[in-house]
Image (cartoon, rainbow, N blue to C red; front, top):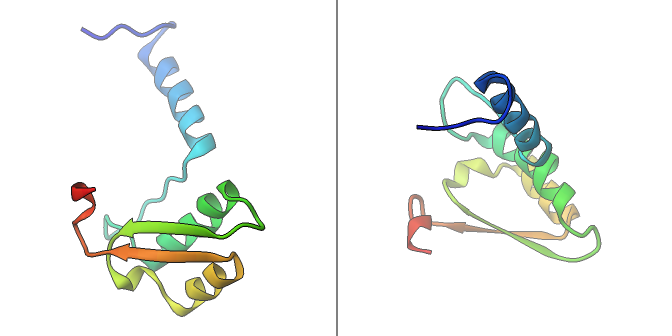
Length: 94
């Protein structure tokens, strides 16, 4: 059994979603997985807003090289960030 505070489950889920969306980025695409544009949107819309603007940063991700295109590489360089890509499907060993 799950109990929710409030008048309905909908109210609870809406409040939960509102809080989640304040701190996370949600994107949908027809492929159902990350693509270069969604990864770029994550970098500019979420990652860079949560790092110190004058200190270097490292972004570690599990994925394909196709997520990083020339435009994103330029944005990364301007934000003093290093992207460290793990081999695909290996983050579970961390």
